[in-house]
Image (cartoon, rainbow, N blue to C red; front, side):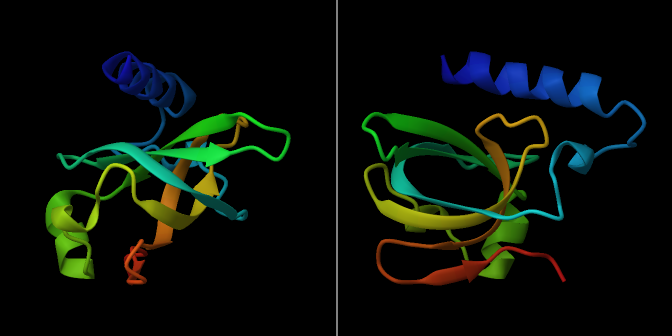
Length: 124
C-alpha cells in the first residue's frame, strides 16, 4: 500500500505541476503552515526525497495518516537529522506546508523528535 501511495503522489505531482523543471513545490501552499503531532508509522530514508508517514489522532476518534516529504538524506544529515533519529512508534511534531488540494500530504519545515531534538529542515 505504501508504494502505491507514493506512486500516486508522484503521479499527482507529474500532473499538477508539469511546468516545473524538477521539483513540484507548486503542489504545496507555501503561504500556509500546518502542525502535525503524531506517531511515526514508517519512513523511507531514500533519494531523491525522504518520506515520513505520521499517524495523527483525530479529535473525534480515529486517525489520519500524513505523508510528509523532506529533502534527500545528504541534505537532511547536513541539517542535523539522521536516519537513527527516526523510529517507528516515536511521537513527533512537524510544522509543514500542506498540499494545495487538501490531501494529507505536506512538505516538512521543521520537526521536534521524541527525544526533544528540534531540527530545522528549511534550506537557507
